[in-house]
Length: 623
Image: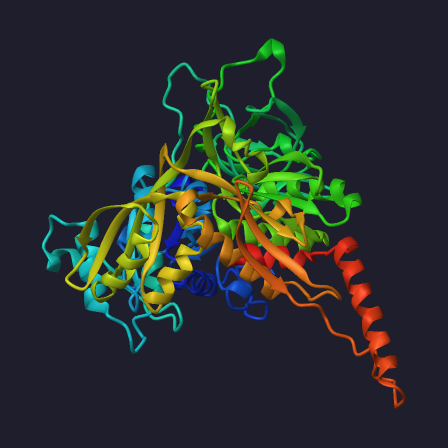
């Protein structure tokens, strides 16, 4: 197909604004999916996505539109009676998966900015819009859920107009905003019209005269197949490639042969070639996942004697995980399985970073870097479901920096790496710029929560008379401690947040350890503020008391910092009626049995060991 008739676009929105439902209507309207096979949230293929009601992975799908068959009112004359290819790259909406959004935007020329009429502009709406503007994408503003009884269409239009065209009058701006209902399909065809008319077609990317136009494709995602090897999802920038051609991955200098290629429609639809402007897949046959990276450039392999200079495409900024947790297999023999599983997950999730580590108490495992606590939860659940692994998960921690007495700077990725307090001269922790979007009547409650973070209030800006953006600077460790849930709770679900890393600042930090029945459990250790050690320790031992099963002996749960016990809870011993079978006789028979039981419990308390189930680690992590 002619490049002039190709449109590549994504849908960006805050979580739960109807993005997946809108994608369903577009697939139905274009006839991409047979009605028999259609199901709600079609592109959310993972069970986890359906259970949690969120999009976790970006998805790409190719839609064919014949403007002569699909009724699109007021389509410009030059586009009538023409066929178009629309490549949709669906994106997540949660702040923890913003890296997925940035990768999808690098593969397209336009973005549908979707806003829920019942909620208005949210924090992730702003964050995604800024990403789209930096990428130079054509923005198509759309208001969704106009059929809802709670819809505030006029107010939402005002917010979008103020955000996108602050210099224009409201009457002029509102005419550019589409109103749709993804649930009923009302006006959805107008989105197709806007995409065809407003999103620019893809063009040849390289402008340097002395560079020969060779095949170049940008890898934006990948998957693994036992037979085809690593399957790279690509946006073709220049030239064309055929099945059977030899290719080279420029960053890793890996050679391969194209086993299969084609379009995502929605499954793999094999073709003989793909060309500039297309979004599709290339089965590389490569069996080592680490050799295929998101952001790498695929080009045609050239022999040494006939090489011409080919520019690698600008890839993606490397994600900088700031939240770390250690993952250990409950069964030490599963270490190799965990290693392979993490490598395969990294193919489709480049933001996941991991390296092996060894701890005496836990054995062999991996210290993993994530973009947020939801990211940790999703990865751990995928490992358990998709690879049948039972895991021990350490308490999440952000990356810290310490200056030791020798003046050396050391990065600390987990509490187990924290050195003796006497060797530390100063400590630093990452700070973030936090944006909270909320209705003005909840500002007071939101501010009370933010004050507990020990951060710095910056300013409050008003989107409209009824909605405001609170900007706050705070330590990152406060963000990962369920701040999102707290803000949602006090605002009855109307507030939202996003954040950006600012850098490292000084802080008073200490290590807190947890003893279970006198034995240190390294997975529960964490770095806390010196001023908040007692509160954090008390919360942690109280949660442990809830999730651990009582033993036949009394179990002490203690939070320790600097050699001092700062909080304690006790799990009472499970009782067993050892005298139940007695039916009479002298009372000394009963006392004898009770004394024997008492000695046994004392012996178990001295020598007994508490086995902590993997579920308990996950429950404490979620708390």
